Length: 391
Image (cartoon, rainbow, N blue to C red):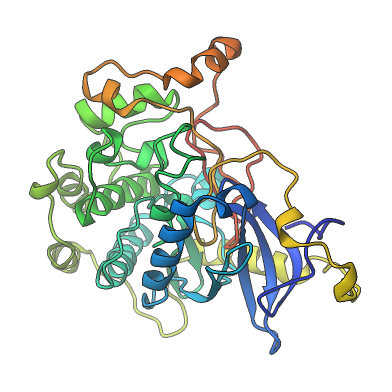
């Protein structure tokens, strides 16, 4: 979280903006407050995206679909201005760390927590799918850990970025270690793609590593399409569930209701509490994160006359990096040609070849040290080929 800068808008869509939460390919993300004082994460679309007619159409459609999503384990869209200039949307602000941040800092979750996370994620994805929405970018940075359970964020808007003039020449949309094979190959994707990603997220949560590794994006995509997952360290019982999710053929993966039953029958059980979802010490880490937010010094925002306010369209000073839709942002992964991956010859998009040659053999350290954003946007502290987010 950073104070507002001189070029930032003071308000968007009736929400008073109080701090920056992050930035990325879709736009800048702010901590905002409603007139009643409700905290929200406000995303303001980048001007160049706002000028893309295809993006505007998809953004409008996906925002309307996302606003229908509700559930105990989602962070829903509560307001949006898809026809404003620039477009924007606001989601519930979740004062919890991302799964990415927790695992990066402390390693894989205890078995009990991994089981509870799996059950919560299945319920969240069911809520998303029930409204006809496919997430398309389910990953640890898009899972926030609130005191009363996980929250899946950035659903519904991912499709709006896919295929724009901005993203189409840069990258396959998504986060490489958590893509499905069909997504990696550039094929049409549906609900089964989210099931594959869900399995990958559970493996990461339980072991601290994605099932197909990380590092060079082209190599990871090749393993996703052609290789076997590494599942060492996945707790007994969960192993059967993630193995079913990670089947290459979409039609062979289990449905979400089937996954619910597998989790219900296979879970070792845990002490139930009306006040605590997570076991210790995970709960303590979540509470520490929340305390840090409440005790952080808040920027003092002076009232700015309307005549002197800077338009939101001028509030960007950073080059584009990829952003998911709701509360998390990611660094732009190295562009990969899906067709080349399908042929077993991963490669970068031709337009990117000169830049890659200039970079030489340098590459990121992988996705494991996530962004430091929050439920409003990822904030990358280190470059990563596929990108990640977190509070």
